Length: 550
Image (cartoon, rainbow, N blue to C red; front, side, top):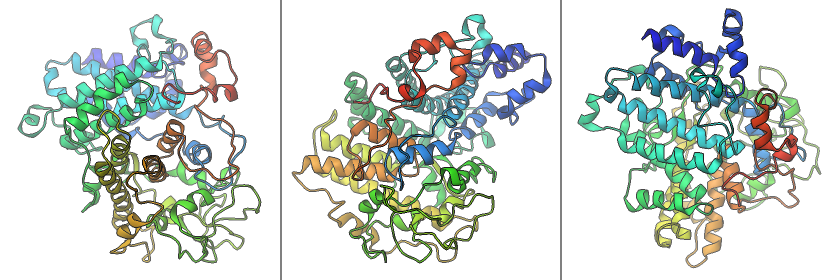
């Protein structure tokens, strides 16, 4: 084990792709070592084990700068009020990158510890679930940045040749990761055979060692990326769809949830009270809503059109029951969406104030517009951070059947999956609100009416129409985009991939197809950065499309 700990010591110093040489040069300085490796304090060298590293990996799955989500991506997918014509992204593009390479180093070291153990077979499930998490994280990186260092990244302990890894081709990474993901899902042992596996106990807080749920989670990711890649690379995508849909492989399919546990086993992500039980976990999200310089975040006219039949400010036109969880009226109790053409001064809002203590909901006198729900934003202890939801999966299947992607077109099946997606999305949000124990929500918190979902499904803006293939696909995409309003990277991917998401008249923001590479890559991995970026400035890099984008 001493050899593993020594390797881990070096591994931690070389976690990121571009800073390996700098980290090695600082190895003799304890103070610098602690500063560089601040994210690793939960797993010390003395406790470096594969299960402990997995726990670290699962805790970090949704760590990134939520200012990027709320200020930039909400704008780019036209889900907030006033658009930022010029994107203020330069301060927010590096956090996901740096966290990813720390995670990748952890993952590769997990595999090393397993392979060098006396009995790798008892770690089969741990290897599989680690691979599932890292596969999603890696493909999310590709969605954001395009080409990235991958195959030779985060292994600086193997020698000087790996200090500055080259950027690998997106298509090659997608292919490799999807193959690894498929193998991982198929290798998971469940039922009585799971008894041969090392018990993970409290180290597995993500799904509490429910390996049937892990299989569904892995298949959900596979299906997401099969649809993502279908138009660009059907040779990769079609066999995955055939395997999952044709083979009736396990996927989340509960639709209703009797408890938070049931919801968690079908909607995968970090549940703060369970996975990351610390009040500071969501602080960045609160910051993005309260910080004056970035807080143009209101109920937009574009989203309002998708959830209400009319502009009646008493809310009588609202037909989407999720509206009451996601948003709240202005301080006068009026449902007034924010025009997206800067024609009306925004005033204050329900909750945005530049200090740590929020003003009470609807207490600011000049609040003109309906905004994101004060209580939802403040509920840092119970609001889940979902990476892929059951609703996402149903909408993917609806799109597959509506278009005939690797299967025969089938309106009946498309409509069933579409309606199940809407049901599961509504039920997710109301189950969360009903079970929140944080004390943030008032006694008058939203409750779901007995006929609310049926009314929602029957609305002409929502219901699919036999024979209207193009219109039905647009509705499916619209609802997938809307259901992802709290998972903005996914809404951004849907918007870029399809070009079918709703947009307000005159919506014309800066072109933003990908995140530019962080500045420290230019400084510390220059030659490889130059090959990947062509030396382009950030604004120009942002116009480059990722592999699967049309």
